[in-house]
Image (cartoon, rainbow, N blue to C red; front, side, top):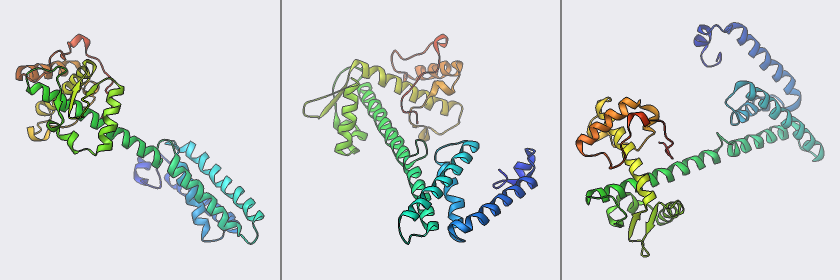
Length: 275
């Protein structure tokens, strides 16, 4: 806090001057001691890399401090051992290389902030968004025909589905079939919803339209800008507001049949893939 915003730290009552002196003293001590191990230039890396590595593993300062010290100590220990076992390998360079290897490991494999974990979350989100879009489009295609049932819908009528790559289509269809939500024709030219899929699609449409109505009613957002993805509406809207928005949708004839939620039963629900 002192490093990034001294004024804010002062307003919070922290002894800024004392902390600043303490930090500078610690940096000087580490630098002086580390000069004998890794040299003048590499001491900068040894100051930065352990803390940067530890940051990938935690959100708490006290835990990060302990982890940074542990990573720095391990780097020095294994670097010194490696240097003693391999002829003509300087200890300082090997220590920093070990620290760099620990940084790369943290960068890739940390469970919350690592690259692989972030990539998995992005892929999962993309899949869930695609599933929601497909179910909503199927529902709306059936709605335009006058009744939402298990009738097959031509793939050519589904814009999002046509834009996906073939491997992505196969993945989405497989996931929905495993969940018993989607039926696919043998030639893959038509898709239809199972009874379970109709329930899921109805809930998605309801949440999406409630969110649109909320933006129109309270957010003063233009109608051309309210087509956002379905969200956890019932987590952020009170029961009274939900019923009011449902009444507005019902008056417009846009409330999915059987999806109205009485005020007495309004409660947070779990909707997969909140965006």
